[in-house]
Length: 244
Image (tube, rainbow, N blue to C red; front, side, top):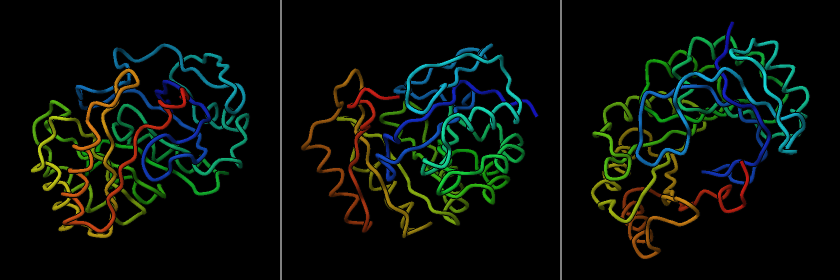
């Protein structure tokens, strides 16, 4: 099975409920969306995958793409898998490769808590094919005011129904222009679909600066807390630390 990978490395999770947890990141190529704030370069499938040579060392070697599952397992063996909380399948959008994940996931053994799927939350059919193989799901609700995309509430709702059968949280990126109604819609969708799922509000961060004032951020959290019990404000801490 050929796997289109852009990079494999060890670092701390910088977003969401697992902030500070050590993970191995396997970044799969490609995405079905083009969000205005995306910081992942998506051009053509890379000829090489960069892989870290030792956990957290920041030294990489380059392997020809696509990689075989055996090659990925060998890379993980050099990254001290057992010291990591979990293995993050990220992107881009990893669920574009749901058929590959079905083959790859069983080989990703040895971390302490299993497989963590980071996804934009818009491919429910693809999620249904792999949900039995992942342990945690970190999904986005893409707010139109920030992402520049049309509303995706229906897809997000169907996705959340499936994701919530596992440990799951929802993340929304917000900016100064984010209207209260979008946060209210996000919170309402969680409440009606999977009321125990936490909501993480993530301030937009570009070039080290937040794109939202503390007052506005606080207001949006208060609006969500009128609907949900667990609403957290968590910035991208890896950017603050200068880590991958």
